[in-house]
Length: 120
Image (cartoon, rainbow, N blue to C red; front, top):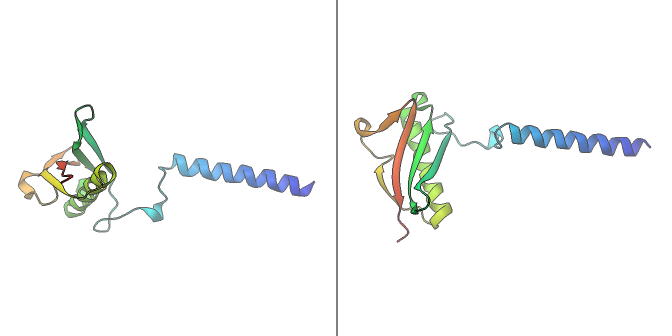
């Protein structure tokens, strides 16, 4: 009888832990990649999915932490996007990590890059 209660308790504990990880952002803190000592939330998405996945934007939040770190995070996110969708890390950046600081797009504490995956 004691073994059954322990199994049920363990299952409930495991389910609660799994829910906490899912609700907590899906990425354990120790698995996050930092840039310049800071963590940046970034995402890449196609500009027009119906037209092509090759043209995309990257948005990096909390750019005020470190402009250099945000630029590196954006480059990493763009590279990951192209590898996932085209199997290549080649990108033709319109605005990207190597863009002159005066030409960067920063809107509401968010750095915005734009590029095209180059599958050639």
